[in-house]
Amino acid sequence: MSITATDASTYIPNIGEWLAVEHDVSHNWLRDLIENVVKRPKPFHPVIQEFKDLIEDDPQLYVLFHQMFEEVPTKPPYNKDPTGAPQVRQHPSTKRFFQPAHGTQVCDYHLMLSLFNELLTHAPEYNDSVLVGFPYNAILDWPICTKAGYAVFLNEKVNNQLRKMLAVWTDFLESSDSRYVLNHGATGGWFGEAAMATMPDFYNVFQCDPSKPYHGFTSWDNFFTRQLKPGARPIAFPGDDNIINNACEAAPFCLATNAKVRDRFWIKSQPYSLYDMLAGNRDGTLAPQFYGSQSNGATVYQAFLSTRSYHRWHSPINGKVLGTRMVPGTYYSEICPEGFDPAGPNDSQGYITHVATRALIYMEANNPNIGLMCFMAVGMAECSSCEVTVVEGQIVKKGQELGMFHFGGSTYCLIFRPGVKVYFHLNQTPSRDATNIPINSAIAFVGNKNSLSSQAE
Image (cartoon, rainbow, N blue to C red):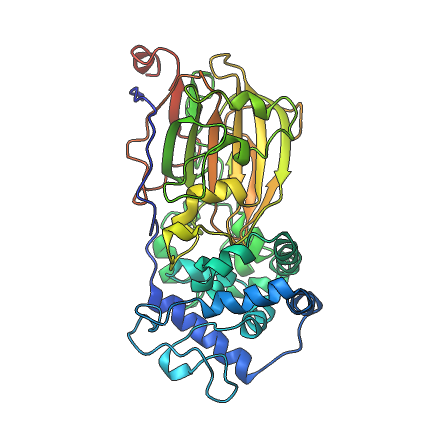
């Protein structure tokens, strides 16, 4: 194998619709869910009742939760469902909710909470819609991107309550009751023909036993965090410390050099702001080493995982773990300048690296030309559970597990200090249309860009 040198240069992709979304599928799913909660109402789980009390006991939140639904435009396309039928904002009898014959829209916080309550005992079914893989996100859909919604989902009290709610859902997804979606059904089954068509090498790549019930998986989460079969993803150049490997099974999204210490990451172009990504100076002497100056910034590589991807993280280098940090953050915050995002937070990929729940793993590479680098795992929406499985002081080798995401698609970054000359070879341009690069593949290198190609044969 040969690696060709390509300079890392600032590249801001045309962010938006990175993954195709079948809106008919998403809205049909949401319509059916709404119809179910209206016809078969359930008492609120204590965590949902606590959410309701939070909204109604805080005047500011009470206003904002009303406004974020009211601010969704009544003009096209927001006044119609994907089939073109009129979008109804109020149930004809209750003066809220929906009209099943004409599509669906969540129109107030009462319905939102009822749907959240229902989902606490639902596992994600297979579907062609990205948002069905993000069921809570599908419920919020348009309101997230209103001005009031922006304020709501940056609010610390709201995010704390979302964290509690999603922890209850996590308990269900880690239980055997969640396995009901692990079947061969034509609709909703993760081992069905439609699902397997999107994961054609599943049985060759992942550890499972089709002869056992549920293929041997003990829960939905056990299936989601499934492990690779030995040799399924060979480790490229395991002994060459000049080579940097892919840390996740992910598609290149953005590659930037000269990332500033502070920048306006909430604007449309979503530039990286290192101080905010790395949570300021709370990591002592580690984070500040990435800040550099206005003329000599860090290099950031970002890639995006899909719901169907392998979700464990592997070390991109040989070296030593110097520190780890979990940074609590938002779950559904998106930037308003991007407008309404029917598949949020797809249009806010750069932005969420600064505000979302994320894990930081600082590693000192054996190669001094790399030195200290940072792996950042960024949770997305309800998929914000990041589990780190390495500890400070641990020696790691390329391809060794660092941790994993739980419950959905996410994004990750590799961050290199100012002055590190790193050259990327991705065989594609980072963009919304990029395709997955297998984990453990060589994606970058340091050293003499004119000579490394021949050394890496």
